[in-house]
Image (cartoon, rainbow, N blue to C red; front, side, top):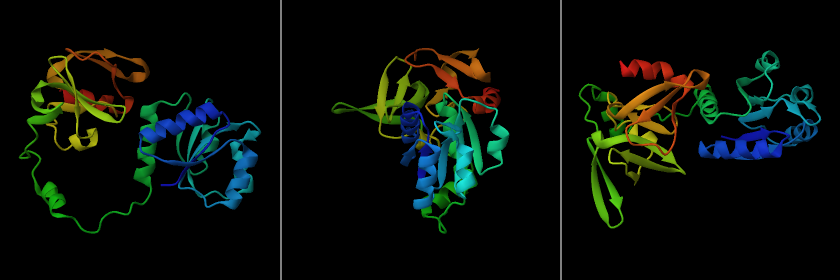
Length: 251
């Protein structure tokens, strides 16, 4: 996926680049003005996706489209919402208000990936077929995990884990005894391994165990904050898009 950023505030452009890197989205080019962008589009292959600030130092970014027919998908990033209607008349996927929330950015990228044609595999390997044929009610989920601690291997039962979380590109298990263990896996891999009746992915960074939830508190922007029995290192926030499913899961 070829991605560029058009943003006149260089610190904001660098921050967006870091957030996208955390989502495994590589940015090939960063542009900073209408004039620079027009020249770039006239001399380069257009990207798959543009993250586009609306108000640039030399005018509104809509002026770019008066000079160049851009076929790329666009995710607008702006501190103002009065241009939303005009933005959606273009090839707009989403409209993110600054400061950009990492959860909203993640959802915007997922929305783009869901909308574009994907080159799916034409054949399935044996493991894929097994996954499709297994009845979810009969599926065996992991009941324990083996974790390396120095020269030793430690066995942790799944029901001892208060939450799984990602930090600095690592995945950790926080257990009911107050310990945090680095795991050799990712949250994405855990999706197929965790018992869905017990574990729920409340955000891009956290899976929580229902048996270790101490309290659930209303939070800003229609979100929820979760308190666990022992884990206190970071706030656990249920992202706005997952609140409804989270409430259903609790029932």
